Image (cartoon, rainbow, N blue to C red; front, side, top):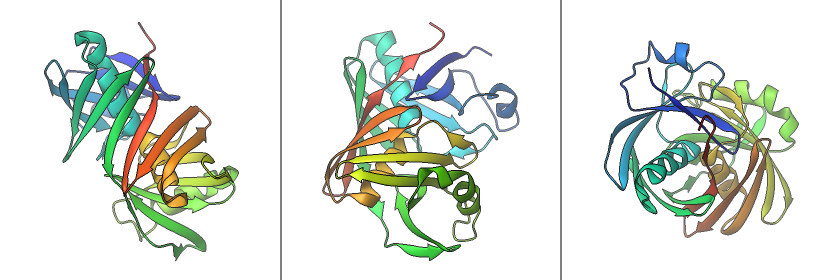
Length: 229
């Protein structure tokens, strides 16, 4: 199969416009965070599927949709791109080396006690379980919450530290992947779980992402670039 290799804040994906299925994905996705399958596209829009390395599908990916937007922009020169994934459509604007994405509504639940932890469930088009604490606890917290019965379809997990208002440090355990260097939807989730609004900078091991929160919706800002060009 033909693939190109991309990364967004340390999140590495392969991208292809050839057809995939759950059985084939694990063999191709070795040492990556997943595969972006371009199902269809025009000059300023693309429809994609996001495959996790274990062959499961992700409902949403902030870094994945940003890579798809950069891929199409490099081909057609479009500066505003609509990326469809599942039931959502992400509007992305190319701003030089960064891409600004309208991620749509974010739903934040009340904190609840799960497995001895205070957990904030957040819906960004995919599920997240946010724990405020020491990010170094992620290797224990991540697998514990991902498969907890509270989340029958499994969940993405983040442990986040509030460094100061508007600045966070976080680590991510992605459903079907394990720990990753960053995550776009996780950036939105930890920002929304800790802030009512405003401009939030999220430090991940793989790089920084910015989230702008306003009236229950989020904009995500970050880079995306090709690795094998």
